[in-house]
Structure formats: structure tokens, C-alpha cells
Image (tube, rainbow, N blue to C red; front, top):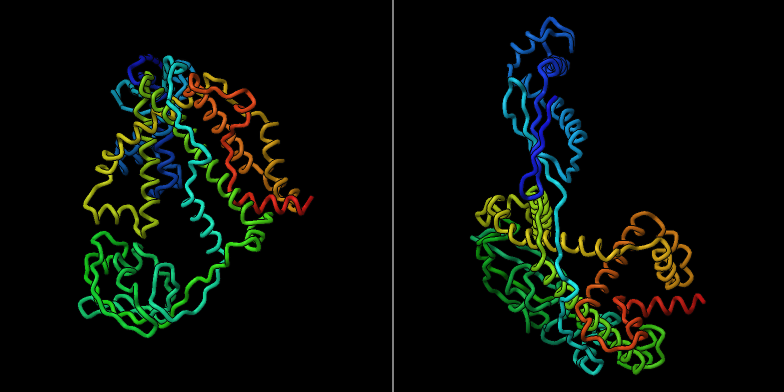
Length: 460
């Protein structure tokens, strides 16, 4: 076997492999034997038909293709060992000639990334101060907490946003009944598109016992092909109405939310949570700004194969997104009049940007020596488990299984990388003391932590 190696652009190499004649003949015989094992040939037991009989029955091309499938894998592996190439994906194969058998393998190699002077990148931080947390946001959170603990109460009034309605619904298109629900429960959410856009607005203001009739068009792009693009005549009767009775915002309510003695304490915690989220969003904005600038100035080369792999991943995500709307990807593309190839072309610029950022991020973490030690994972496991109080040991056992361990390690790795990006981006802006810097973390307190703290204290 003769092998020549040529490095070409875009992180690829071409292996030209010339296979000796005797080896090709042997592979052809082995290919014919495999065909005869799975193909019934009269007069011969499985795998025992002579080569010329198999060739006459299935054709020279079929025998050659069968032989080439196994032979090409063998000689490719041998050529890689000889050339010392390290592919990162499957190679593309081309048959240059059959006599002598010569194969050309285009091998995708590891991407090459030069980051440049990323240490000089700066992003102007926008400080998020406690007083910047708007009272409106605080009140929205407190109202949401009250709604979680509210009770549905029958009411005799007009239907309004957030009410729980009991409806008798019938919808007809061209005289055919296409929508129907008897005594179905329906939460009135304005702007919602269930069962169709405009429906919530048409029933807003109804009173128990009232009946309304109206016509609404269904969109052309709709999971239900029987409804897509049709106008439906609705008849709706409001059978009953319930509104949420919210508990008063007082100290007793605060105690039901968590380990709080007063509304004042609860409000302060909500403010701190919102403040922490604002600070986290700002730090993430800075980190993203640094990574974007780093990508723009970097020199990046990669084989086309990994871009196609990134596109495959995006197509998969796209298919999952349309599945949540009730479509298969082929059906969705059929409705919008688009082929998968056209979709790939549309997504290609986004895939290129995503791939480049991923390659730059990987090179950055490699340059900075960012890694997570086992003891760091162990500390995080202990911290999470301890927050569960009486269930701490049980939670710890669950967190020590492989999947949670990988998830925790990945999250810690991302946090450490983001912290380093922020340090770079704000190097000339930070004036805090070292203790203040140490106190600034990506971990954000959420309202769920309130319940965990309560359990932890009770457990202690």
C-alpha cells in the first residue's frame, strides 16, 4: 500500500492511498462471500457460491461496492497510523481509479485558533445599584407569590384577565363541527393563542350565563391541517366564573413564604434577589461582550465537516421547536413551502457564528488553564445537599451519580470561565478591594432558596 499525504486549506489533509492488486482481489472474494451468505443462490449453500456465480448474479458493481466498504476502512486506518494524522470527524472518500485501486480521503483535522491580544479587550460595565431595583418589579414578585397561594372563588361579575372560566364551546367551519368542549375549564390569558388568536379577547367581559357568537380565522401554518387557513364560527356560553382570592400582604403571609417574620423581611429578600439577578445579567453581558470581541479579532480555521455537524445540531433543535407546536419538521417545511436544504442555507450564518464562538471559548479556556478539580465538585455537592436539611444525605447520594456530577462540573467550569472573561473586560474599571471582588460571584440567590434555607434550619 502506497500512501501520500498533502495538507490543504481549512484544516484538512488529503490521503492518497494506492492498494496493491493482490489485496484488492482478496477483498473482492471476501465481498462476494458476504453477499452469498445473505443472498439465496440456487444450488449453493449460504456463503459457498463461487465468485464468478455471485458476480454474474448481482453484478460487478455490487461486488466491488461490498468489497470497498470493508477494504476502505482497513486501509484508511493503516494510512492514518502511517501519516500520524488525527482526524476529528469522518473522512470523505473518492475512488480516483480502480486499476490500480486508488482512494482519495479528505481528512478533517483539529481547528486552528489564534486569539490575538485578548487581554486588552475592555467592556464598559453598567453598575446595577440596589436603588435601581424598581418598586414595580418587587410588587410583581410579591403579587406572583400571593397568586401561588391564592384560592379560586366563584364570582358573579364580568370575566377578566386571570379568571378560571367554565365554558361550553362549539366551533364550526363550512357547517362542520371542528372545535368542541362541554364544561371545559379555561384560564383567561389575554394575548394567548388557545384555541386560536383572538379567542381570549372575544370572551373577555362575559358574565355567567351569557352566550356569544363570533368568527375567527385559523392561521395557514397550524398543526391541525383540518383547521389551517379556515374561518371558524364559534358559539361560546359561559357556565361559571372563578377569580383568585389573594391572601393579604401581611406578616402572616410572609411566614408562609419562608423563614420570615415580617413583610419587611420578605420584601428585602425579594429586592436582594432582583438585585442579584440584575448584577448577574450585567456580568454576563460583559462576559459575552469580551467573547464576541475576542471572536471578531481571532484567526479561526476549521474543516467544513464540523460546520455541517453544527448545522445538523441546529436542524435537530429546529425540529424539536416545531414539534412543540405540533408539527414534524417535514410537515412544517411543507406548510411554509421550504426544503430542508433551504433551511440549512438560512441557518448557516448563525451556525458559523455559533461554531466560531465555541472554538474561541475552548481555546480561551485552554490558554487560561481553566479546569475544575474533584474537590471543587465535592464542595458544590456538599453545599447543595446541605440546603435540603433532613434530606441532605439522600440528596448527596443522588448528586454523586455520573450525570449530576457531569452537570455540576460543566456548570462550575462555565462559571469560572465567565468570571475570567469579566476580569479581563473590566480590568481598568474595577476599583473595589480584594474582599469585595471575592464576594462577587455568579451564583444567584432565588426565591426557591428561601424554602431550602427553611428546611435546612429546621433540619439543624
